[in-house]
Amino acid sequence: MKKKIFGGIIVTALISAAMTLCLLCMLLGFNSSNVLDLGRFFVALRFIEGNYVQEVERGKLIDGAISGMVNSLGDPHSIYLAPQFYTQLRAETSGAFGGIGVYMNFKDGGVHIMNVIPDSPGQQAGLQADDEILAVDGQPVSEMSPGEVALKIRGQIGTPVELLIHRDGAEDKTYTLTRENINVQTVAGKMIDDRLGYIRISNFSEKSGEEFKSTLAELERAGMKGLVLDLRQNPGGVITSCVEIAREIVPAGKIVSVIKRDGSAEVFTSELAAARFPIVVLIDKNSASASELLSGALQDTKAALVVGETSYGKGSVQTLIPMAHNDGLKLTIAKYYTPSGKCIDGVGIVPDVEIKSPAPPFKMYDIELDATNDPPLAKAEDLLTQQIDAGKILFDDDALK
Image (cartoon, rainbow, N blue to C red; front, side):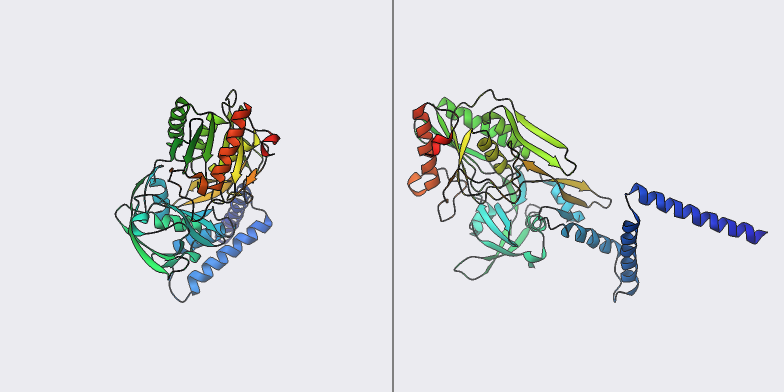
């Protein structure tokens, strides 16, 4: 009798465990194929734990598995953040961070410096635009994702970081830099002449909207009738600041739509009654993300002509997901669409007038303008002058004739 009771308890326990496992699989969205895949994972995990030549921590294996899953997406903007990187990313404040003062371009497996902030550790050490970063603290960048490279270069203020730099025409060289608090004014402007204003946005931080409104108001008080908006070398940044700026210059309607996989959308709009002056936007191959959204909104609404080179093509949205061990995921969850419904991811903004920016590399923070050595700027001035003389605000097809 006892054996029967004991056997019944075991059978009941097994059935209960099986039902619980099935229910858990259903809640997690697993089907029979998924369960087999999950089984493969645990078989590999247990085999490595029990047979690898050296003892290995399970946590390290799980971290590696999660990182491998994210890397398998083939998305340079999605990344698994180990605890030190996750903590660092959360601690960064917009507009001020511990770093070396460079903007980087991640394309074709390489890491190039786009531009160097004046008086930053990068400039003081002699780094230049178009330098290629080969390694950070001895680790080749080819072994890291773009997000890991950026986070490895940033860090605690006052700590050193070593970069192995390749520069065309010179031997590879190691630079040792000390991280500093980098404060950046993102918007600068001036009058080109008595009618034309010029504003450059270096990137979009939380302060950019306020800086833009102040600069724009100052130029309007000075008599501005047309605006050159320079977004060359602008890597993007905070979308809410981009939208805040767009609401000052994009006519009423859509600015940008953020659309998820399930089709749900968040639409940002402008309520500006009408455009107040003609605008020409300057972009280049390093104009990315929020700078593409702003130029795309102005182009689609015919509130501006876009002059320069096809932009970078970064039109995806990332979110930060906390996990159980002070780690996290930075994951692409949506894509941006311009007012006309164009997705710029991997495509970029195609200019209305294609002109390459000057070489050597365009200087993002230099507003000592010289149109004779800057063909896109010269073209922008010409287009604006035509519109002002014709008494037009919005551009039409005749502007390119």
